[in-house]
Length: 328
Image 1: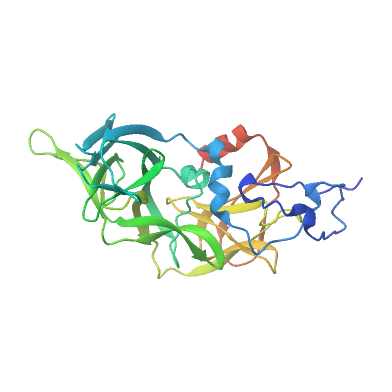
Image 2 (image 1 turned 120 degrees about the vertical axis):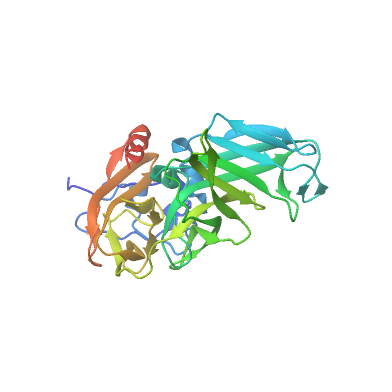
């Protein structure tokens, strides 16, 4: 039997259309009856917004708590996180909200977090160097709750490497290179400050970040990577059956907190992204799931030009993928 390419797939981007797609065969491919391994077609309708659901087993759990929305509250979690909620400033689609509100808080601190939650650090036409990103969701009786206009929350997050250069960004879904991606948009209504205190003797100590925002859900601090740097397109190829329906490819920068999800080039059947600074040291990473099996591909490279770089994924247990991501 000829050697066939292994397939890697992430469950989030399977659209259930495998059996109806036209099959493309090559001399390096062995067909398996009624098997998703046969599918080599690319789709123009893939929506990556479901990716987060597929990566749920790799995600760190959110903080679950509650507070009285009528009285307001300051919720603290050790010395690393504090959130101040104002009193009497909450609404849902059915009107004003009073009484107990459920709160869910998720914090992304590491490069691996941005992959696990599929929150790449990009804006509409540039790459971002990220600080920490936060998701705050409020609900009451299963309905989402929002801040009233003019009301703000304040969140303090410990980070000894906090930078005063960070600007306030909010997360949303948008189109990048013709593909749907999660991205970050600059927002002038919010603020990123340095959280600090004063010790005895007047010594000022930096503790981390202080975010002030009237927008819930995803927000955080980012900085646009120098736009004057020479840049190139990054192209990544994989074996025949690794398509945009079962695979997602990331580029993870070595010396900055920057993670980019590559877009699909359906015509050339490869993954790509634009505006990668030449000379960047990165890890290329592909994640795939097919037939309930997971696959991981990786390669450490220095980006010098637009020549295609190939990845050859290997089958991995989910906990091994988790361990690998933790080392990025």
